[in-house]
Amino acid sequence: MDDAASAAGPPSLTHRLILGDCLDILPTLAAGSVDVVVTSPPYNLGIAYRSYDDRLAEEAYLDWLCRVAEQIRRVMAPDASFFLNIAGSSNAPWLPFELIVRLRRLFVLQNHITWIKSIAIDRGAAGVDSVGHFKPVGGQRFLHHNHEHIFHLTLSGQVKLDRLAIGVPFKDKSNIARRGHAQDLRCRGNTWFIPYETVKSRAQKFHHPSTFPVALPRWCIRLHGKAQASVLDPFMGTGTTILAARLEGASGIGIELDPSYLAVARERLGAEPG
Ligand SMILES: C[S@@+](CC[C@H](N)C(=O)[O-])C[C@H]1O[C@@H](n2cnc3c(N)ncnc32)[C@H](O)[C@@H]1O
Image (cartoon, rainbow, N blue to C red; front, top):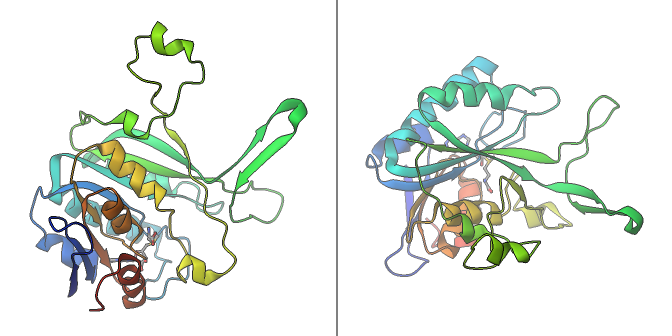
């Protein structure tokens, strides 16, 4: 294990970037010590990661992720939130659902958020607004995949959230007084439109095949609503979650198998090379 501690945030907050297999590292973390987990594991779709082979037999993949989830459960505080971002594909459409059903013995599914990466909105005579990027799917059987899942898992199903921390203004302002709201802010609901930034080269995506935008973990951390939370990403990749933690005034622990991706995370966080 190569543990590169970084104090790139405010002095009381630490951001630890750890090189290793999360199944080896998670058991070394204290039980009940984490407030928010935001992670996107490999999806078993044959993505070309540098170290990890993303092509396991389906049963082996599901068993493996369940073992990781058991360790995540162990390190979660009683009122912690676990935001699990995952998607299927046209060839493996059941996979995210198979996984979430298996996780039922460990967690309560408190919210199911749909992360919308791209959307076309019909505006009548004004035409159609098409916003956001997605990877096109060829052929004539399948639609492009414009969304992914974010499963919000908790230990009790009773975790209070700060819904207005990621709230949106009321469309109809008369609702504010009529429904007794203190401010022009309402819960945004469980569809989150977070587009990828437009990039022109792989370098702008840190030479990593499957990052998520930093707004995604930022919204999760904000929604959980705990000041100076302790955030964990056991499949850290390029460090997006830990960067989000720092931007949200939270501590972070990121675990990543591949030294190159860990090096990118260090660079993004302004951490000393390990
Ligand atoms: C979907 S990517 C995460 C990307 C990340 N959200 C980001 O924005 O950069 C999954 C990552 O998990 C890493 N990984 C795979 N198996 C792992 C393991 N056993 N322990 C730690 N990391 C692992 C892969 O190398 C890959 O970088």
